[in-house]
Length: 475
Image 1 (cartoon, rainbow, N blue to C red):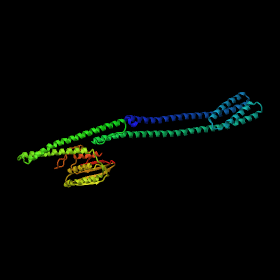
Image 2 (cartoon, one colour):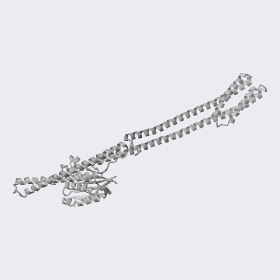
Image 3 (cartoon, one colour):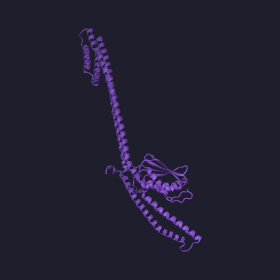
Image 4 (spheres, rainbow, N blue to C red):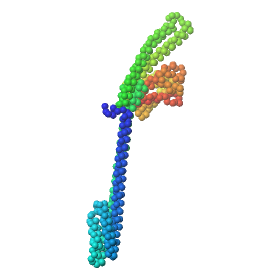
């Protein structure tokens, strides 16, 4: 016995919900963590881009300040301007170091050249010898080479910022695709779990429903076994106990009816024999009044004996419905055989019996379905007017086979429609001049059809009665 079957239905249902909730929560948490990492990366990329851009701008500004201070020093020979050059030079080198750290892919020669030319400019400012023109030319050469380097570094920084932005966008797209796949996979897995567990948990409920349906149809011959959670298996065991108990009660009822019927038939036979002796004049000739009383006694004892025999017949049909011997049966051929066996009855009333359509073969008990069809035809013959038509129609309807029977009789009164299949029930519309029926023919039809998992319905009809039998295709 697996762990799942040891748990109850409620525990399994709660476990499935928790499992799905954990799965979806894990996907959500992972998505949140991924978004948080992307946000941190985006902020860091933006911060570095701002730092690089600011330092490029600072390098350019400090280089201009260096040039201006150097030229002013050469003209005025004021040490304050040289000190300003030194301060601007120091700030520019700091900015250059930051740029070098943020551009690891740039060749170090560019930074070395900037340092070389700036140092050459400083050397000019430091040297006090030489003509001013020569010093001016040397300073111009050194400072003029800084600006192209600054422009190249600015372009490198711009490309680096764009590269990092593009890399960030690519990573965003990649993470979005991954998150989308993970969320869809989580939802799909959750749906599969819900569907799988739902079907697995619904199966024992369907078994219980089917078992209750068999009990309702008085079919006590199949043991009830429910597979699934422990509490539903206990329900199945209780239903099986109920099945056995109902079977015992049904057997007790049958024995009781047989016993009572036997006990009643013996005195009834004596009464009928005594009435026959009276009518034969064994104890003397009867007066007209006495003869009338004897006739009433004879008629009622015969009617009572018939009712007892029909009661036994219905009880036997109810019992036999629980024991089917299925085989492949052509319902159309079986119907035509039943019609042929009652040919004398319907021909005596000048009736015409028509069979239309066809249906696939079914797994049926031919004897019991044959009795059901015979009772249905007998009922139609009894209620049909002389010279009328009885129509049968066979058809397939999905996984079921339909058999319709229509007659041209008085039909079933609206007040009788709900009870027409009850045993021993007599409707208000009886055929004129016909012997009063016993009211079990349609009941037997319902018992045998229900035993096969089918149903019989009384359908609305403009004239006559319209009965429809549904039989499932149980392969």
